[in-house]
Image (cartoon, rainbow, N blue to C red; front, side, top):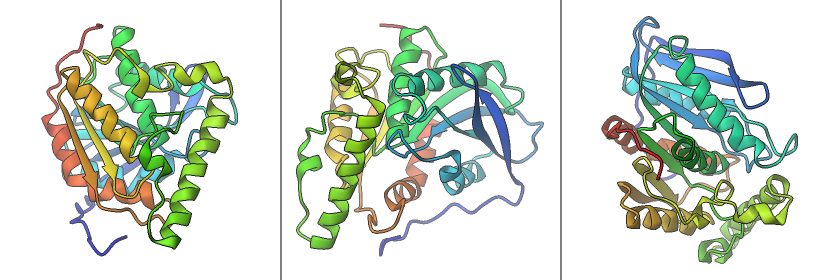
Length: 290
């Protein structure tokens, strides 16, 4: 992973992973529930996590280690890894409509999720972090469901790919090649997700360009050194802070880009303790429409 090894939360002996069919905007979606402890116990918090993959790939399997350790460390939390419609099937706004529909489904089916319905947190990595940010806007705009927090891990927030970190080339040749490939994957993902140029400025596609960022839930935003998505993550954090949103922005150590999926996996695992602390401390207040 890296020379700097994180201290991992151990997996609970009574950890349970349960596959479910959740309801999206136009039909069923794959989802996986993570619980530690007795299923009959109603958890205070549900964390809904959206996977990465540049809108064109990825699956609910990717978060197994991260979410398993998250609920193992706090039995008052349940986690749900949520699927969504990929751009190869249907482009924007299918994925974001799925994300909002899934939150409504979770609220309606809280008993099935061993959740008491009190605190709902959204999280995601890369394209999934875009969905977590966007569904926070949608929940505000559409009057619910109320969110206690949003966790954005190396989020894709700028379809224009215009930030300095997206264009910078690291000194190390091998690392430069991999960073270039990551940037290329982001560009290809956006081409699939946003085939209509006009959609690239829509706040539900590009939250970084939104002019309405008030009355959103508290945010934890994680970027990483040498990552092309670093600057847009930090710029979004700065905009949220300016709008009065309680926001923590942290830059992680360089991720091992040479490993397939290394960026996503290590960002989640390196910051696991901080993510868990943020979720526990999220204020849980309702955020009314602006």
